[in-house]
Length: 162
Image (cartoon, rainbow, N blue to C red; front, top):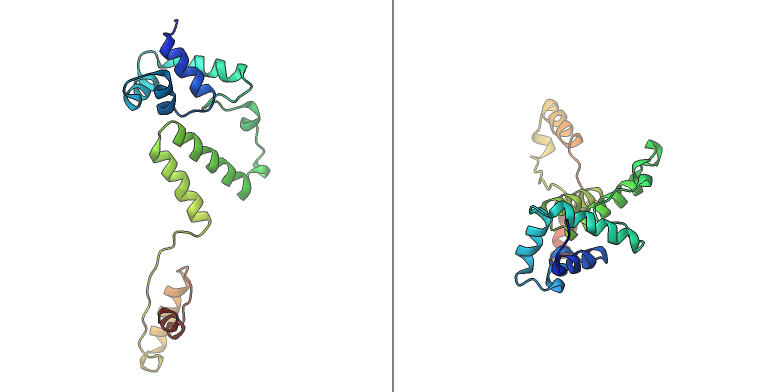
């Protein structure tokens, strides 16, 4: 299946590293967002994607969305924290390039969780320990043990707010 001049220009721009919407704009489409979506999912999408892969390969680039044999042959022992974070970074950038915002957000969320950027905050208030029974103290300690938390001294927190 032969591509039109606009489609060929679009494929060249994507193979060169532009995201699909920017590539559609460079190719001269009047509505780049709509055109990019149509080129990605329309009836000619397989031919478009094949041409992008062909152009990227001829330019020495990794075709967008292509998994190389090296990426497939990963030893389980290589799948450590750094490897996982690199994979998430790659997922994020590729998802952004293809406007897959949900996948990009999930990748960012996983990286954020790993870096302790998102913590569930729960405030604990206790009655005076003198007023608690032994079983109540044990129950409170069990609840605390099951929760990841950061201890903040209320007095020092009040001073830093001032």
